[in-house]
Image (tube, rainbow, N blue to C red; front, side, top):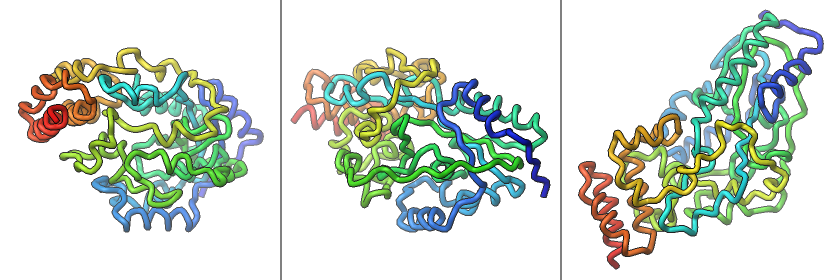
Length: 347
């Protein structure tokens, strides 16, 4: 196998990554140990992935980068901060607005991160190496790889935690045939802290470092297609797209500076959108409002379902006409959620 070695290339790659706006970069061998594969197998065996069948369908590739690309030698792991400028949870007490996860309040991070990754990959390719770019859309265990590359550690909420950036890092990878000196892996610094476990509104963590996605508000509002189980609806509050609770309470966030990428800075109209206005959106209106946003991927009907549940949790009888409108929606799932909201507000 051809494995080019270029003297001093690690420093040049890190400098290029910094110039492109990445906040963290590290190198790792393109392999995962048995522990990570065992964790993945246990997660799938417990059906904690819910309806995300794509996780099971390519589990072999997910657990072994060389199964995804046999020629890969090294992984360049990169992080881009999206740390909010203020309190990520400040909207949760405002029943009249919907809370959208911090990462989805502007441009789709897939596009932003991938654009930067492609520029870095071009630089690496110019050194005579093969490259492939990944950002959360392929069977890559990016968090364990990022930990191996020294970007941080996989915390008790199962997301990556960085000493410098807290829990607010988008991850991406450039896999390459280039032989790069690996960085020292990140060590676990969660200690005895249980803040992320205790704050979860739906008790989605059966144990530290384990997530049951079927109970997670992010999964329920984004990935889950049908009616949301009633046992979780009250706990969802006004969370209409994703959930930041376990990330936001991490003590390591105190070292994080607000993200610098302008394309990820929160749009004013997505910071605290009024539920009454979101409920009026038809498909065309939804597409216009969320053009370029990750929210657009779930479609109008799924967002309207989430809005209906938030209306039911608002505690404001003045929103009854809005909920009633959704109760008459052409989509059966939206209509059922709207009827639930009407019953809650009426009571």
